[in-house]
Image 1 (cartoon, rainbow, N blue to C red):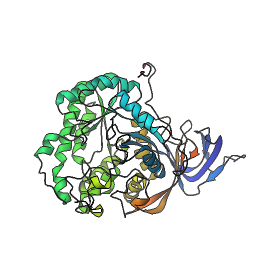
Image 2 (cartoon, rainbow, N blue to C red):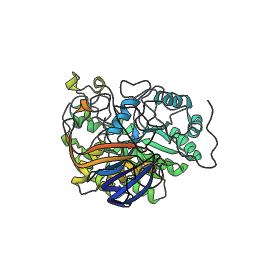
Image 3 (cartoon, rainbow, N blue to C red):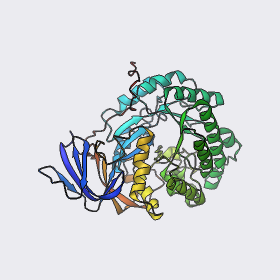
Image 4 (cartoon, rainbow, N blue to C red):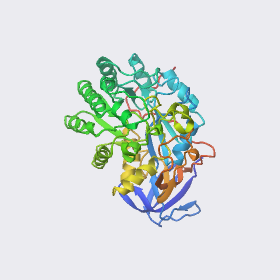
Amino acid sequence: MPIDAAVIRSRRVVLPDGERPADVLVRAGRIERVAPHGTLPADGRPLTDLGATALLPGLVDTHVHVNEPGRTDWEGFASATRAAAAGGVTTIVDMPLNSIPPTTTVQGLAAKRKTAEGQTWVDLGFWGGAVPGNTGDLELLHREGVFGFKSFLAPSGVEEFPHLATPADLESALAEQARLGALAIIHAEDPAVLDAAPQVPGAHYRDFLASRPDGAEAAAVAALLAAARRTGARVHVLHVSSAAVLPLLRRARADGVQVTAETCPHYLTLAAEEVPDGDTAFKCCPPIRDESNRDLLWQALADGEFTAVVSDHSPSTPDLKLLRRHGGSGDFAAAWGGIASLQLGLPAVWTEARRRGHTLADVVRWMSAGPAALVGLTGTKGAIAPGYDADLVAFDPDGELTVRAERLHHKNPVTPYAGRTLTGLVRHTWLRGRPVDPDGAPHGRQLTRPRTPNEGAPVEY
């Protein structure tokens, strides 16, 4: 059970209106009061004084591939949520693919929920999937509380989650989601552009980068925005890697299209110029691009053009990554694409953000408040404010972390950050006022999308 009442004190509390010294009173799992520093007496309640260690709201990561059931050797709920807690993430939303079955039916959702019971160290929600032929399932999934629906405009890489291959497929899916008032989240790469790009197998990263050009993202986003205009759907562009899409998003917003976008730590902290040939831990789709592109993403982030910075944690086993250090070929074309970074997103982003003159308040806006707002959890997650869940993180912004992949809680010791020294250490994580111990018992909850007053009851199945 949560501690009935406790005080957490810090000289650096990141609040919705900025950073300042404060005392935070937690009662029955929620934040009851934020008071000036040193003014809340303990009165027999536990008092944690963090000194100069910062107190942040728990991060919300709305883009996590847990892969369980079906591909639990890639990642599972226990390992993923332990990693999340160790990285200061207190809420994740699981993607609907790479598990078997995928979350494209209420039966698939039920399988996910049953598997996750009793093995989540942080709070957990689910995305549904919109694929060809399941339009009739979307309303049932929506009523069951998924936070929206993911679709691919290019092949997903797994046969049980096909992409929306035709304009009619996309139009049908978006029209139904517009009718439901659901959020459509989209992996936007154009398969025709990808097919026309040079496909050169081998260990040279420059060849892989050429196979996933900026034009693939731009063409897919343009088609998505045109369909959103026609259908009135609310759309969210996932893992933007290319700055070429930014002008398209700006024009669409100016025209009244309901569109948001996200980017990821690896696009903000890594660059193509530094990817070693053959090191397929860096492979993801869309790919990590060059330094000049990275600078443009940072500028867009500073200008408020991205709603969220989220991990796109997409792990796999070392053999699928074809890692040379595990005896693989290092072939970028053949290796599984995905970055494992759930535990490392906060220090990775903070390392680069601080170098560029940003503040902890900026990072909280990008990685906590923004993602919470995206999925409708404002009011319970994403801020240190009265009435919110007491999901909190003690973060040492000056500490240093040298990444040792084998010491992470991720199921497989594969990450492009291996060997890097990052700035920022998560010292403690609390979930609804209760300390999270990755080696202790789990007390995460399963979350559902907030319901509107006139919605029907959840379906029975």
